[in-house]
Image (cartoon, rainbow, N blue to C red; front, side, top):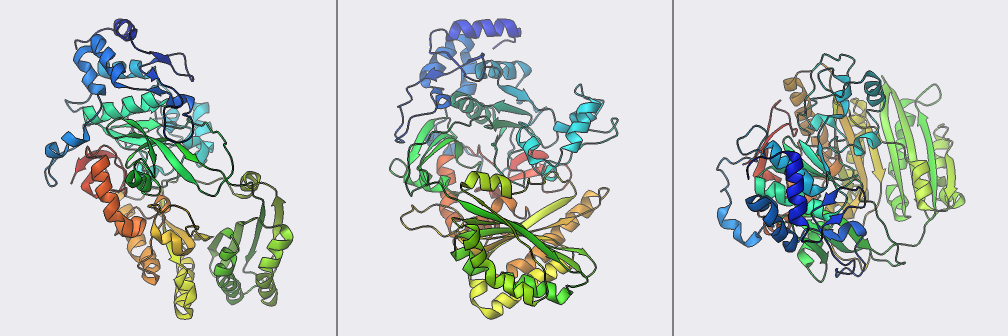
Amino acid sequence: MAPCQPFSLRAILIVGLALCNFCTAESNAALVAAQSVSSNSTTAGAHLFPAETLQLTDAVLANLSSAIKNQTQLFAFGNNASVSANLTPRGVKFCKVFPDDILWPSKWTWELFDLLLGGALVKTVPLAASCYSAWPEYDAAECEAVTSNWTNSYMHAADPASIMWPLYEGRTCLPTDDPSGNCTVGGYSSYAVNVSNVAQIQLAVNFARNTGIRLVVKNTGHDFNGKSTGSGALGIWTHYLKDIDIYGLAADQVLALEVVLANGRFVTVTEETDPDLFWALRGGGGGTYGVVTSIISRVHPKVSATVSTGSFSTGTNVSVDAFWAGVRAYFDRFAVNADAGTYAYFWVMATGTDSFTFLMSPYFAVNHTVAEFNALMKPWYDQLEKLGITYTPNSTYYDDFYDAWQAGFPLETVASSTMMTGSWLFPRANWENATLLNTTFETIKSTIEAGYPMLAYNLKAELPDRYPASSANPAFRNTLMHAITSTSWASNATNAEILDTMKYFSNNVLGQWRATCPDAGAYMSEADILEPNFQQAFYGENYPRLYTLKQRYDPFGLFYAPTAVGSEDWTVESEDGLPDQNGRLCRV
């Protein structure tokens, strides 16, 4: 299609699309290439949300062809069956199309894409660009606001490209008080679609697949390791898909999912319609099989909770030995506490030489009154008292879970560029054998004494009776403690020094944790980015089946995220030599 001015291109589109059901997205007044379908056109047992009734269909594409001719192929649906024979063999160099490549979409192509999206395409401007005079967005006051809120996870979630941990973007645009510094898009996606309906997701999926550019998905979820970003990528930003309907009470959870697949088709997935994909989507990792626009589930009865906080530290009246005895007494009760249906979020850390702190922040006792919670914890409180440790819990009862969560859990601190985290899931078996429990506790203790803090959860995540099997990491089913630790480096450390620190942390610090239970695993979203056997650690025995399903549902290799299923078939040619997303994505 010959280049044309934006206004004439828009005129051609409006005329050409007038023949189809050309709909208006509720979130804006711009036109979107979509057909309005009935909200009852689903097998999920619940109606489609308004955003899901606007879909890209074959009829829309047929009408588009009269307006944009052969450019329609940029938005055509994929054919899974015809892909296998055309895939680049493993071992042959093949990379996703990258900015400045000859195949990178032209300015006019991006404008056409934006018109079909209804103006939802956002060109990435890094959050901290306001701190740099070379950017049109330079604004000292805005820079100050960004800087003061940089560690606030909500600010990064509300941006179409930013991530929780800029280390894995490449640290290319950090807040600064030097406006003459350098800021680039780096490992952030080049563009993002601010999604308000399914058609926009389908257009983005088809556009990325047909042009060969990288695709990433960013929701409002939780991940430390940069799965929602990638240099030169098109991002699908689902932040504003917030609809919720309530139907009733029941025990089962996910019953169905509405999904845009890698071929661009919008489908309903249930245990009956597609048992394999239904299994894979529930635990098999995000950004892997498709873009989920909604989950249909039955809700649970409203539950109450008691939230409790407290702390104790070494000091004049608490020796180091007494401190560790108090922590050990708490560890010894993990199984009892978890079996009571409670879970805890706590820190143990060194605060100086032979100085340590235990911080409960918070203990979360679902379906427990304060009196019931105190009765559960009394044996530990009594042990602390015998050790001469003063521990005064601050416990409050809430009659609904949401209020308890809002009041109890602290705002997560994110966005450090000078540290990384890693974690491990410690199984119940480590508590059932006295020798192994001693080894586990001493390993954790030595980690903390060496200056590495520990943030941990005491929890129980068994699969309840009558729940359908899922692809969640099997290690979760036997876990009593999810523990996280971290390492850091100086702000002026070289990339080589940072990589050496990361490798030492992974191999030595976390290596000691793994050694206590090598057949366990880790929670992927808070895990070590260098996890040596991520397939086993994050997916366990489910991995071979998940990998096979990945090839079936995404033979195009469209969806990629670090440590996701099938990610071993790809590599990011990082510009700084660190395990981040600041580089071209290529097949191994």
